[in-house]
Amino acid sequence: MAEPSVQGKRRPRPSRTRKPPGHAPDPRVTVVVITHNRRDELLRTLDRLGRLPEAPAVAVVDNASRDGTADAVRSACPEVALTVLGRNLGAVGRNIAARSVTTPYIAFCDDDVWWAPGALARAADLLDAHPEVATVTGRVIVEPDGTEDPIVPELRNSPVPPPPGRPLPGPVLGSILAGASMVRADAFRAVGGFSPRLVLGGEEELLSADLLAHGYALLYANDVEVHHQASPLRDPSARRRAGIRNTLWSTWLRRPLPRAVRRTLDLARTVPRDRVSLAAFADAARGMPGVLRARRVLPRHAEQALRTLDARQLHGPARRYVG
Image 1 (cartoon, one colour):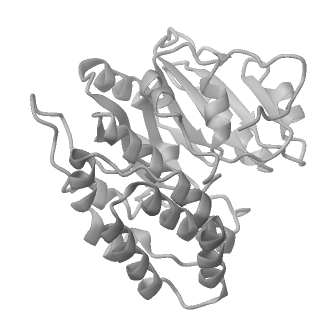
Image 2 (image 1 turned 180 degrees about the vertical axis):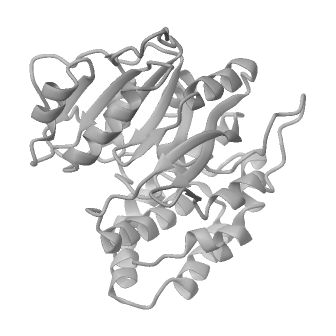
């Protein structure tokens, strides 16, 4: 992929947010936030991150916003490292920020998401203690109601078997939640980060599969709390269209042929029968020649882990393609 255009003469390194009184910065973690045309929500998130006892380094990647996001961040949060892209690259913005991160761990955070006090330190402690773990995904609380996200019970009761060796302190996952996970920076870079092909919307599935293929475990931690207040500016139809397309592409990029065919047929049978779903399948079909050229089937251990999730992904209440 060609280097995206970045406004300004240099890309700053992640810097420390304002330090809460009595708390030393945690040198293990950088929080990476991607944003697009959500200035006010981003500023709210940055304010919450700036008040955390971990006082983490924060890097923001502005995906070509047109609402004054960059100027607002420079004015309100000059301590934050800001990268402004000339076009919207979606999740690849996280890859760009990761190039400059010098901490061993990266906590991903969307502009409508924030980590609870102590959550970053707890996730970093888990990664410190378990080098075989590449990611820690937290318990997502939906605001303003303060209720668990529907995906949480699925994470908590994940059927993916743990890797051989010493036990892990929580369930093992087949896929992370990008906006609510901390990753081992070296592992993230080793698998190439998020795929430019997928842009945004279910982009975690391919990254997670590649981490599994490299022998890493993906951990869920119920005591790592992340809050999500869904932006009213999101387009649910566009989100669903991208999600269906990316599920199909990720499946054909990594799963064996029988499983790829089966999952495609299952999706065709279960998604809403409307124009959005039809457009998603058309998008997937147009990109399929390139997908098939890039196809690389997972090794056996990773495929076996994902097979434990096939039925749950099809019938789970958290994966209904609506909107």
